[in-house]
Length: 408
Length: 80
Image (cartoon, rainbow over all chains, first blue to last red; front, side, top):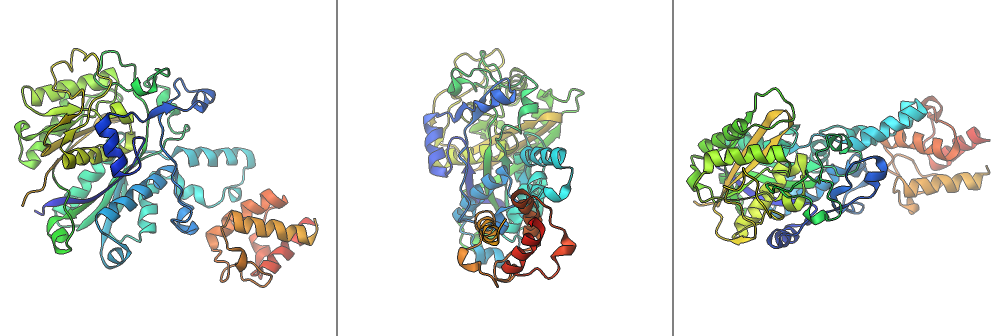
């Protein structure tokens, strides 16, 4: 089996649009949540959302390569450009080598809705233009990135609800570990336009604490009232260790474990502590690690009562009495949904590189399930050698990833 | 709509919507070879022309329309 290392990462999120800015936000416990008033006019119950800067791609990419990019694919391009740069992979390298591309994405609502509106009005597909099809498919991210960078390796999208980004990294890890790919660009992307989250808002799952946006996302806190939707993109370069050494790449960390499971329960929106435990345990077995080896758990906890409760129960089952610090960075970012598994691995890598654990902000009063957990309420300056990152999604899909500091 | 107005409208959308350099737009400029307009661009041009000139381009009428000047001729024949 090959060893799999991370040689590049990039991020475009509501807490920063490069690694340095995100590191500062994580250290300070800075929230990226704000208000988008238009949501209320559109009919949302809550106007809260992560506020993500729109990238300017004109001048960066030729129009012919740009026209098929959806909102989330634009974010993914910005994150991928950072990741390739950090990994010291340039156009010449991509031309001469087989590099794969796997991203997590589970919607592209805006082009779907805009195209449907034109069809409702014109009843003529010739008046739609050419770009909607390349923007509207879930695979918009991987089809565009693979075209822009002229990639020649594996090329597909993982749709697994809020675990999409995490599974994409897990699959890239498995392909490299088994010798099927040397280098894979992987990650997750999430649109933030208000078309995309209306049906999620319909469930009443979003916080309505619009008076204090920075306090709205409060995972594990007794007084939470729901999650805050957010988005952007995160990208990682996963690479066969021998291949990285041969080309003189800088190794950031090693991916050592991937665990997955399905809840096997009959309620589509209900998490399961048993399902979470099986994914985490599988990842630890894969990594050859025990709960004692984990220094930090980046929890999936979204700030909903049910989700936080089941994860707290699951973590307590595996990590009761262990030293691992826990935080949900969603307290700052909101729920980055399809991208979350990838962005939270980037946040964890930043913590690992800079010897700190980012805080679970807004945790004023833990609920009865999280009170027993070792949750970091403030930034903790400590060595972080091994991280477990959880991602869970609708339909019972669970993913857990383990990364550790690289040692020969 | 007079010829000058048609040419200005076409030039404007080629520059603004298709991001073609102004210096590449001249009467005998080839749509494909000089301006870099590809088959997918033509799918968008159908939409843009409908919006700007109020008619829908028919593919079979575009045979032989390969320069800026001929394209403006075609539009002129349809709008007047």
